[in-house]
Image 1: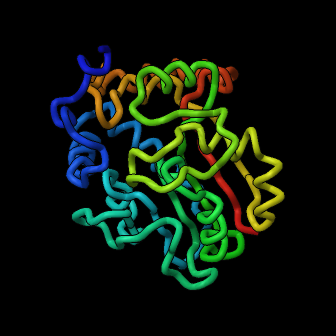
Image 2: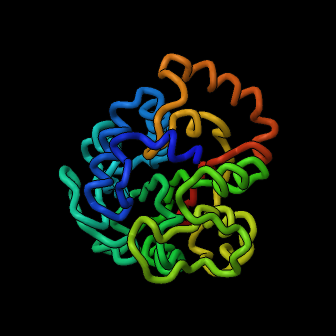
Image 3: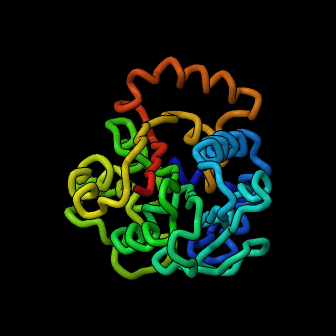
Length: 255
């Protein structure tokens, strides 16, 4: 009931697997001041993590975002046709030569990949030595379990024994707990199966601001001018980010 009351008019009665929903999300990210500031912070992190070099940077799942506005040289991509996106591709099959990419960046994408195992193999082939795979992903904490289990539209299952999601529609097929499963619960397995990747950073963060922004489906709960105040509150809570975090900043380095 709470979600039905807060649903943004642009997303009402809209299937998230409808390609037009991505365009509406794009509009929301640009027109909701609080949400746009969240994305600007995320993008700033991704840009700062990029290694120096002349090789291209690929973003997977670019459709609703605006990272390319901040990095015009970025290769943007999406799994279905979206205006302004450079490439139509599946993250499990990247059409790039070996060691040809400086980095791959993603925002809220990993937990939609039906076979993350296949993705890590393909990304490891395409990213050059000392290149990076940087991402923002939902994370599992005592607080986020409550939020994602009751207020979010995507599946969230920290207890599933498998990484694989199986076949299904590109966006509604998901497990919001997947990054935590791979890089926290099953970290030893990841490091054993993918020795070409070094886990440089896994940092939980942002317990409230995305929630207050309403995300890409709900109305904003706070005006944009309060963003700095809430960032300060979150900074004060940073010692307890493993209890309160809702997302994680994750960076892998190609050995």
